[in-house]
Picture 1 (cartoon, rainbow, N blue to C red):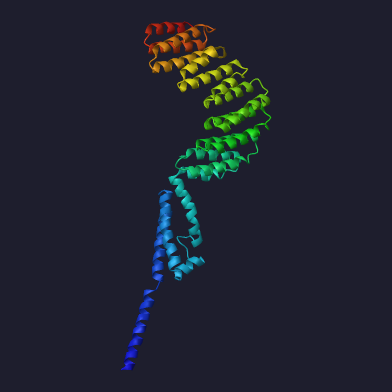
Picture 2 (tube, helix red, strand yellow):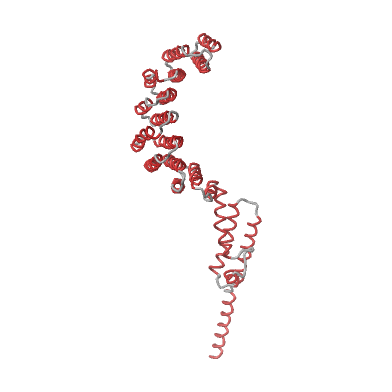
Length: 392
């Protein structure tokens, strides 16, 4: 009886061993996963879909291969793959794994072209072109949604700008970076970079390059606004222009641009002081016209009239008419027709006093004045003025 019991135990043990061995044969499952992964990868390689869909197919195949390597590492196919003897759709295991990075990047490019632009930009060797490209790409992003991305691109653009050997190009790039930081609301960072750019200006020798470089810096200053740092920076501009630009052509232009920047950031007193430094009558008139225009656009009509009256001798006749008409338009919009009518009449008197009966500017001025009379409902006066224009 005891012998029989022992025999039964032995038979049961053998049965369990055979069952366990059969149930843990990992090769069929590993092979099944390998075949499935290969088919998916073949589908991805032959697919005409976009890169995102191709990457998604690759990810499915990768999941199956990872399962083979991690869960069935002792299987024949796992050993063969790790040794390089077997391939997945003609790719070794290492080649298959390294494919992920490239496909992911291409998939990102499909869904976000700016990512592709960054990829291409980073192939540029010239630091000036690289910096300019990165600034352009950064400006194309939604600053609110992708702030960290934009900051990263601008940081890269700044570092690239520092390696630009041509000083005027370096100033242009630094100013561009600063302007983009200003759009992002990073005014202190932008101001520091502009200060760096201005420091380089004194090392330039060509007057045209100095003037152009200051223009880039001033453009960025306008984007930042009238902060304490920018006002301090602009105060350094005056001696820079006065001392470095010893030229009758470029000096008036540079003072005009400095006056315009003060105007845009609504530092009107400083804008007027700078405009009065302009030796050229045309550029001085243009500067005062810009100041008056800014007052008009901010609906400070009395201030605009004050500029037009107090500095009337600083305006050319055509600029004076233009500004008076702009103010008249604002009065018309607000229903103050009497004030508008008086200003239009004032513009007509200026036009009649213009020299050169056949001047194009006089004809344009009279035509514009005629249009205003039509808007005010005085068709008879409009016709009279139009006849004057035709006879000029």
